[in-house]
Amino acid sequence: MRHIRLAAMQKLTAMLSEIKVANGCSIDVARVTRNLPMATAEDTVPMIAINEAIRSGDYTTAGEGYKRNDTIDFLMVMWTKSTNANPDEDAYALIGEVEKVLARAVAINPSNGNPMYPDDYRLGGLAVKVAWSPAIIHNPPDKVKSHTYAYFQFQITFAYDAIDPFVK
Image (tube, rainbow, N blue to C red; front, side, top):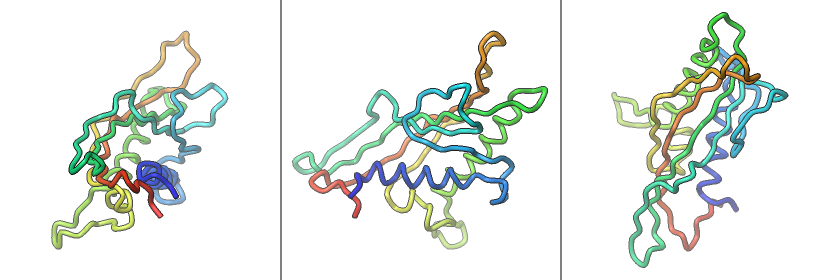
């Protein structure tokens, strides 16, 4: 049994792991992980880490407080190694591919109102809402040996019964 939040993170991790040139993407992601705040010089990039934010986000409860409606804040960090004269070009390629993945979690077909990607919609039905802010790119100073990185802040809203918060 997995907690609903863990199951959703595993689904998102699997979706992001599909960012491969062989799947029609513009860049190959070497690794997707969770709760890794920093990449080292030895890590193979491009790499993505999904981290829960330090603050808990917003929440409401119903009944005796065990019916949860929680919005959790996350920070997705992406590292790239620049192969161009402009260090942000690979980062923008990765941002575009990640946005495509996040869009699959929310896309509705305007002609019929059904999810365009049913298996990925709301992270496989585990979330009530998925939203994200624009990505930010940062290039480390010349004196620091590091990768170019970008990050998204995103939120996932979960509704579940805390008496049994597990996905079977």
